[in-house]
Length: 142
Image 1 (cartoon, rainbow, N blue to C red):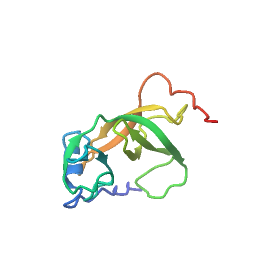
Image 2 (cartoon, one colour; image 1 turned 45 degrees about the vertical axis):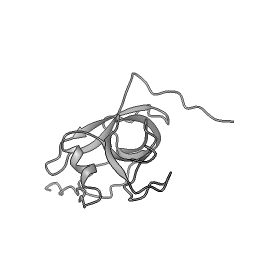
Image 3 (cartoon, rainbow, N blue to C red; image 1 turned 90 degrees about the horizontal axis):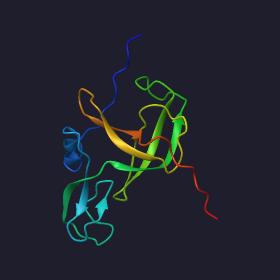
C-alpha cells in the first residue's frame, strides 16, 4: 500500500515569516517592539502591553518538556504509530508543540530538549530531541 501524502502547514500573510525562517533552519517568533515580550501563537496585539508593533526575532531553540503524550491510535495514514508529541516551554517563555524525534523511553516533564529540523520536500519542520544524557527526575510541588 503506498504511503499517504503528509499534510503540511499553509503559511499565510501573518504566519509566513514564522514558516519562512524555517527554510533556513531557524526558529523565529514575534517579539513586541514595545516591551520585548515574545509571543506565540502569532497575533497582531501584544498581550503584555497592547502594542501593535513587533519584529520577528530568532529564538534559542532550547527548552524543557512542559507536557507530552505518546500517540498509539493512528489518526492519519502518513503518521505511523507510536509517536510522541511534546509541548515545549522555550527559554524565551513561549510554548510550542511538535514531534519528539527518537525514543520516548525515560521522557519526563522538565526534560531539556532542543530543536532539530525534519527536511520535508515542501517545508522544513521543527522536531524536538532530548538533550543531555538523561532527563531530570520529575519534581512534585507541595
